[in-house]
Image 1 (cartoon, rainbow, N blue to C red):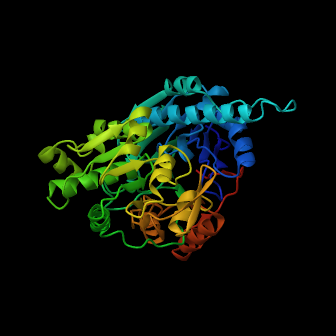
Image 2 (image 1 turned 90 degrees about the horizontal axis):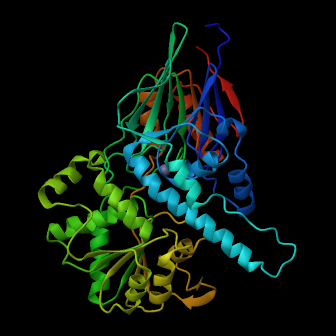
Image 3 (image 1 turned 60 degrees about the vertical axis):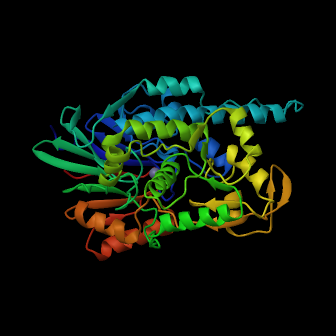
Length: 471
Ligand SMILES: [Zn+2]
């Protein structure tokens, strides 16, 4: 091999921003894509970015996925639709989660396009909107998934081997270790994926890759520290008992992946320990129900506490008074519920999905409680509730917020600044360079300077930048 062999990284997404993860690595004349996430921002820009995937991405030989979150996996069906025909390697749990999430995402894309086209039925100049991808496109893409176990090395191309290490962020999440042999040299490139935290429920602690030469590192909280999440269970218990004392319902808007299963498991443990008197609980979201089945099917991803619970008490995600609701009629029937009950429903930021109906039904009764358990972005109904606005608009109608709104100090699934630096101290100890990606510009730049202060060489790439790597 000549010295001119290609060894190059290109940053195709999540550069100076948090969504649309997509990175490209060329080794000689072969290339791999890491993640193909949906870009989520203003409608027009998102549309353009998600529809116009870079040629490098479509022409990559193989794809690797760090985890199932839509901002990392959501554009895989578009990639395949545009001609990508290689295998999509990921962990087994990620493959199963993606099956449910990509089908769901396709249905949303199709429904959105239908809604927009119907809205403009009388507009002669309206150009029919095509969905970003359809359920059929998602099915085709799912055929290309190639599931792997954690920590089991496999050969991608001659001289390029790959391993998935548990990133402890969501079920199946991984940091990806790519070992490359070039001439007599061995080089290791690590894609951190989203880095989780120690002691998260259900999941094992992150496994930190070692001896990296080059690191692409997430920077979501490059300059922020999390408040301690201790006492989440106690707060949950207090909230339920308060609402129960006045005979109210508790509506829990929750993300379908991970947070819903965390809450269900926490309730299960509280009941099992005799701390919580059994109470009817409904998980009302077809996606949450499907994803919970995937959690049950992957005990190999559980931490010791969850394994122990499974051994001693059975299913961590099921108990006597828990009902999984998929049927629309059954969901509507929940409106007639009398007495105290917990309804866990998506979406997590109250912007769409069945939870909006439950909020409309419950928000004007002071007996009820809305329990916020996750991050609420600006300009969402969830954020307005967290801000304790006296009135909010639901389905276009202003309503008084009489129900009590409580915010739980839930766990963040992302490492904070100190945890990121601890991770880098191990992974990037001898690295030639760290590329800070997946963060808003201020967070990426802050992480860069924290890393430099520790003597590491770090940089913040922009979208479309390439870096030739030394070997
Ligand atoms: Zn993630």
